[in-house]
Length: 277
Image (cartoon, rainbow, N blue to C red; front, side, top):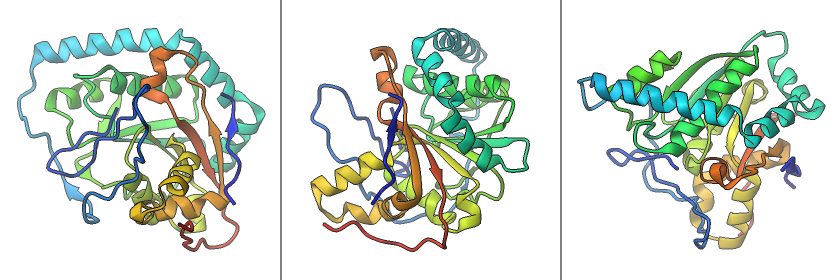
Protein backbone atom coordinates (compact mmCIF):
# COMPACT_ATOMS: atom_id res chain seq x y z
CA UNK A 1 0.00 0.00 0.00
CA UNK A 2 1.17 3.54 -0.68
CA UNK A 3 2.09 5.78 2.20
CA UNK A 4 -0.86 8.03 2.96
CA UNK A 5 -0.62 11.52 1.48
CA UNK A 6 -0.95 14.21 4.12
CA UNK A 7 -3.00 17.23 3.10
CA UNK A 8 -1.91 20.50 4.65
CA UNK A 9 -4.14 21.52 2.08
CA UNK A 10 1.71 24.25 -17.60
CA UNK A 11 3.41 22.73 -18.62
CA UNK A 12 6.27 20.79 -19.91
CA UNK A 13 6.61 21.79 -23.51
CA UNK A 14 7.97 19.67 -26.26
CA UNK A 15 10.64 20.33 -28.83
CA UNK A 16 11.63 17.76 -31.42
CA UNK A 17 9.25 15.34 -29.70
CA UNK A 18 11.33 15.12 -26.54
CA UNK A 19 8.86 16.08 -23.80
CA UNK A 20 5.09 16.02 -23.78
CA UNK A 21 2.67 18.77 -22.84
CA UNK A 22 0.65 17.94 -19.71
CA UNK A 23 -1.85 20.69 -18.94
CA UNK A 24 -4.79 19.59 -16.78
CA UNK A 25 -7.29 22.42 -16.52
CA UNK A 26 -10.13 23.13 -14.13
CA UNK A 27 -13.52 22.64 -15.73
CA UNK A 28 -12.33 20.02 -18.20
CA UNK A 29 -12.68 16.29 -17.85
CA UNK A 30 -9.45 14.98 -16.38
CA UNK A 31 -7.60 12.43 -18.43
CA UNK A 32 -4.77 10.22 -17.36
CA UNK A 33 -1.48 12.14 -17.79
CA UNK A 34 0.55 8.93 -17.83
CA UNK A 35 1.43 8.45 -21.47
CA UNK A 36 4.32 6.85 -23.28
CA UNK A 37 5.14 8.95 -26.32
CA UNK A 38 8.73 8.05 -27.15
CA UNK A 39 11.39 5.45 -26.68
CA UNK A 40 13.64 5.88 -23.68
CA UNK A 41 16.38 8.38 -24.49
CA UNK A 42 19.77 9.03 -22.96
CA UNK A 43 21.29 12.41 -22.03
CA UNK A 44 22.38 14.50 -25.02
CA UNK A 45 24.11 17.85 -25.51
CA UNK A 46 21.78 20.82 -25.79
CA UNK A 47 21.86 24.52 -26.66
CA UNK A 48 19.10 27.04 -27.44
CA UNK A 49 18.01 26.94 -31.07
CA UNK A 50 18.08 30.74 -31.24
CA UNK A 51 21.58 32.09 -30.78
CA UNK A 52 20.85 35.80 -30.46
CA UNK A 53 19.94 37.44 -27.16
CA UNK A 54 17.43 40.26 -27.57
CA UNK A 55 18.27 42.96 -25.03
CA UNK A 56 14.76 44.46 -25.09
CA UNK A 57 13.14 41.05 -24.52
CA UNK A 58 15.67 40.35 -21.78
CA UNK A 59 14.85 43.60 -19.99
CA UNK A 60 11.09 42.99 -20.23
CA UNK A 61 11.46 39.44 -18.94
CA UNK A 62 13.52 40.57 -15.96
CA UNK A 63 10.77 43.05 -15.13
CA UNK A 64 8.08 40.35 -15.47
CA UNK A 65 10.00 38.09 -13.10
CA UNK A 66 10.44 40.85 -10.53
CA UNK A 67 6.70 41.59 -10.59
CA UNK A 68 5.85 37.89 -10.37
CA UNK A 69 8.16 37.27 -7.40
CA UNK A 70 6.78 40.25 -5.48
CA UNK A 71 3.22 39.10 -6.13
CA UNK A 72 3.96 35.55 -5.02
CA UNK A 73 5.99 36.50 -1.95
CA UNK A 74 3.08 38.34 -0.35
CA UNK A 75 0.41 35.82 -1.38
CA UNK A 76 -1.52 33.62 1.04
CA UNK A 77 -0.46 30.65 -1.07
CA UNK A 78 3.23 31.27 -0.40
CA UNK A 79 2.74 32.07 3.28
CA UNK A 80 0.76 28.83 3.71
CA UNK A 81 3.47 26.87 1.91
CA UNK A 82 6.15 28.35 4.18
CA UNK A 83 4.15 27.31 7.23
CA UNK A 84 3.87 23.81 5.80
CA UNK A 85 7.61 23.50 5.18
CA UNK A 86 8.37 24.82 8.68
CA UNK A 87 6.02 22.33 10.32
CA UNK A 88 7.92 19.82 12.52
CA UNK A 89 6.80 16.90 10.36
CA UNK A 90 8.17 18.24 7.07
CA UNK A 91 11.25 20.05 8.34
CA UNK A 92 12.29 16.77 9.96
CA UNK A 93 12.04 15.08 6.56
CA UNK A 94 14.29 17.73 5.00
CA UNK A 95 16.82 17.42 7.84
CA UNK A 96 16.85 13.65 7.37
CA UNK A 97 17.75 14.09 3.69
CA UNK A 98 20.39 16.71 4.49
CA UNK A 99 22.07 14.53 7.10
CA UNK A 100 25.50 16.03 7.78
CA UNK A 101 25.40 18.22 4.65
CA UNK A 102 24.77 21.96 4.97
CA UNK A 103 23.16 22.50 1.55
CA UNK A 104 20.61 20.78 -0.65
CA UNK A 105 21.05 21.41 -4.36
CA UNK A 106 17.93 22.22 -6.41
CA UNK A 107 17.42 20.97 -9.97
CA UNK A 108 14.47 22.34 -11.97
CA UNK A 109 13.21 20.25 -14.88
CA UNK A 110 10.53 21.25 -17.37
CA UNK A 111 10.09 24.88 -16.34
CA UNK A 112 8.62 25.80 -19.73
CA UNK A 113 8.80 29.22 -21.38
CA UNK A 114 9.14 31.85 -18.67
CA UNK A 115 8.88 34.53 -21.33
CA UNK A 116 5.60 33.39 -22.84
CA UNK A 117 3.54 32.12 -19.89
CA UNK A 118 2.78 33.18 -16.33
CA UNK A 119 2.61 29.67 -14.84
CA UNK A 120 6.30 28.95 -15.55
CA UNK A 121 7.17 32.36 -14.11
CA UNK A 122 5.21 31.55 -10.96
CA UNK A 123 6.91 28.17 -10.65
CA UNK A 124 10.38 29.67 -11.12
CA UNK A 125 9.51 32.46 -8.68
CA UNK A 126 8.55 29.88 -6.08
CA UNK A 127 11.88 28.06 -6.48
CA UNK A 128 13.83 31.33 -6.14
CA UNK A 129 11.81 32.47 -3.13
CA UNK A 130 12.31 29.13 -1.37
CA UNK A 131 16.06 29.50 -1.84
CA UNK A 132 15.93 33.03 -0.38
CA UNK A 133 13.94 31.86 2.66
CA UNK A 134 15.85 28.68 3.51
CA UNK A 135 19.62 28.86 3.88
CA UNK A 136 19.97 25.11 3.40
CA UNK A 137 18.84 25.33 -0.24
CA UNK A 138 21.96 25.61 -2.38
CA UNK A 139 22.66 26.21 -6.07
CA UNK A 140 19.86 25.98 -8.64
CA UNK A 141 20.25 24.26 -12.00
CA UNK A 142 17.54 24.56 -14.66
CA UNK A 143 16.64 22.72 -17.84
CA UNK A 144 13.87 22.69 -20.39
CA UNK A 145 14.48 21.94 -24.09
CA UNK A 146 12.37 24.94 -25.16
CA UNK A 147 14.41 27.60 -23.32
CA UNK A 148 15.53 30.44 -25.57
CA UNK A 149 18.89 32.21 -25.41
CA UNK A 150 17.15 35.23 -23.89
CA UNK A 151 15.45 33.11 -21.23
CA UNK A 152 18.75 31.39 -20.45
CA UNK A 153 20.41 34.76 -19.92
CA UNK A 154 17.65 35.87 -17.56
CA UNK A 155 17.88 32.61 -15.62
CA UNK A 156 21.60 33.19 -15.17
CA UNK A 157 20.90 36.78 -14.08
CA UNK A 158 18.57 35.36 -11.43
CA UNK A 159 21.35 33.17 -10.08
CA UNK A 160 20.53 29.89 -11.81
CA UNK A 161 22.73 27.70 -13.99
CA UNK A 162 21.23 26.46 -17.27
CA UNK A 163 22.29 22.91 -18.09
CA UNK A 164 23.98 22.24 -21.42
CA UNK A 165 22.89 18.60 -21.30
CA UNK A 166 19.36 17.30 -21.71
CA UNK A 167 19.52 14.68 -18.99
CA UNK A 168 16.06 13.28 -19.86
CA UNK A 169 15.45 13.40 -16.10
CA UNK A 170 18.30 10.95 -15.47
CA UNK A 171 20.18 12.90 -12.78
CA UNK A 172 22.00 10.50 -10.47
CA UNK A 173 21.65 11.95 -6.99
CA UNK A 174 24.97 11.61 -5.14
CA UNK A 175 24.20 14.25 -2.51
CA UNK A 176 21.06 15.86 -1.01
CA UNK A 177 19.07 17.19 -3.97
CA UNK A 178 15.62 18.69 -4.45
CA UNK A 179 14.09 18.00 -7.86
CA UNK A 180 11.64 20.80 -8.57
CA UNK A 181 9.32 19.36 -11.25
CA UNK A 182 5.76 20.75 -11.09
CA UNK A 183 3.55 19.38 -13.88
CA UNK A 184 6.21 17.30 -15.63
CA UNK A 185 5.12 14.18 -17.48
CA UNK A 186 5.13 10.83 -15.72
CA UNK A 187 8.00 9.42 -17.75
CA UNK A 188 10.35 12.17 -16.59
CA UNK A 189 9.66 11.35 -12.92
CA UNK A 190 10.09 7.68 -13.72
CA UNK A 191 13.44 8.27 -15.46
CA UNK A 192 14.65 10.09 -12.35
CA UNK A 193 13.59 7.30 -10.02
CA UNK A 194 15.00 4.59 -12.28
CA UNK A 195 18.39 6.32 -12.33
CA UNK A 196 18.37 6.46 -8.52
CA UNK A 197 16.79 3.10 -7.74
CA UNK A 198 19.11 2.33 -4.81
CA UNK A 199 18.76 3.12 -1.12
CA UNK A 200 21.71 5.51 -0.95
CA UNK A 201 20.40 7.60 -3.86
CA UNK A 202 16.71 7.64 -2.92
CA UNK A 203 17.58 8.77 0.61
CA UNK A 204 19.25 11.86 -0.94
CA UNK A 205 16.21 12.77 -3.01
CA UNK A 206 13.28 15.17 -2.49
CA UNK A 207 10.76 15.73 -5.29
CA UNK A 208 8.40 18.68 -5.54
CA UNK A 209 5.98 17.78 -8.29
CA UNK A 210 2.82 15.98 -9.32
CA UNK A 211 1.22 13.85 -6.64
CA UNK A 212 2.36 10.22 -6.95
CA UNK A 213 -0.77 9.18 -5.09
CA UNK A 214 -2.88 10.80 -7.80
CA UNK A 215 -0.96 8.90 -10.49
CA UNK A 216 -1.72 5.67 -8.67
CA UNK A 217 -5.42 6.59 -8.63
CA UNK A 218 -5.33 7.33 -12.37
CA UNK A 219 -3.77 3.94 -13.09
CA UNK A 220 -6.38 2.18 -10.97
CA UNK A 221 -9.11 4.05 -12.86
CA UNK A 222 -7.85 3.63 -16.42
CA UNK A 223 -6.36 0.11 -16.07
CA UNK A 224 -4.27 0.09 -19.23
CA UNK A 225 -0.71 -0.15 -20.54
CA UNK A 226 0.22 3.34 -19.28
CA UNK A 227 1.57 1.59 -16.18
CA UNK A 228 4.79 0.91 -18.12
CA UNK A 229 5.83 4.58 -18.19
CA UNK A 230 5.33 5.03 -14.44
CA UNK A 231 6.40 1.70 -12.98
CA UNK A 232 9.07 3.17 -10.67
CA UNK A 233 6.66 5.84 -9.41
CA UNK A 234 4.08 3.20 -8.61
CA UNK A 235 6.57 0.86 -6.97
CA UNK A 236 8.02 3.74 -4.92
CA UNK A 237 4.66 4.35 -3.30
CA UNK A 238 5.30 1.76 -0.58
CA UNK A 239 8.22 3.82 0.80
CA UNK A 240 7.15 7.35 -0.20
CA UNK A 241 5.96 9.93 2.30
CA UNK A 242 3.88 12.51 0.47
CA UNK A 243 2.65 15.90 1.65
CA UNK A 244 0.13 17.63 -0.59
CA UNK A 245 0.23 21.43 -0.81
CA UNK A 246 -2.65 23.89 -0.75
CA UNK A 247 -3.15 26.13 -3.76
CA UNK A 248 -5.44 28.35 -1.60
CA UNK A 249 -6.46 30.74 -4.39
CA UNK A 250 -7.41 30.31 -8.05
CA UNK A 251 -4.52 32.63 -9.00
CA UNK A 252 -2.11 29.78 -8.25
CA UNK A 253 -4.24 26.76 -9.15
CA UNK A 254 -2.94 26.48 -12.71
CA UNK A 255 0.70 26.58 -11.68
CA UNK A 256 0.61 24.35 -8.60
CA UNK A 257 -2.53 22.18 -8.45
CA UNK A 258 -2.02 18.51 -7.54
CA UNK A 259 1.54 19.26 -6.35
CA UNK A 260 3.17 17.48 -3.42
CA UNK A 261 6.43 17.06 -1.55
CA UNK A 262 7.80 13.50 -1.83
CA UNK A 263 10.38 11.94 0.51
CA UNK A 264 11.72 8.39 0.14
CA UNK A 265 12.71 5.97 2.88
CA UNK A 266 13.41 2.48 1.48
CA UNK A 267 14.72 0.08 4.11
CA UNK A 268 15.84 -2.56 1.60
CA UNK A 269 16.96 -2.32 -2.01
CA UNK A 270 13.74 -1.53 -3.91
CA UNK A 271 12.28 -3.90 -6.45
CA UNK A 272 9.71 -3.23 -9.14
CA UNK A 273 6.07 -4.03 -8.60
CA UNK A 274 3.32 -3.25 -11.10
CA UNK A 275 -0.08 -2.12 -9.95
CA UNK A 276 -2.67 -4.79 -10.78
CA UNK A 277 -4.85 -3.77 -13.68
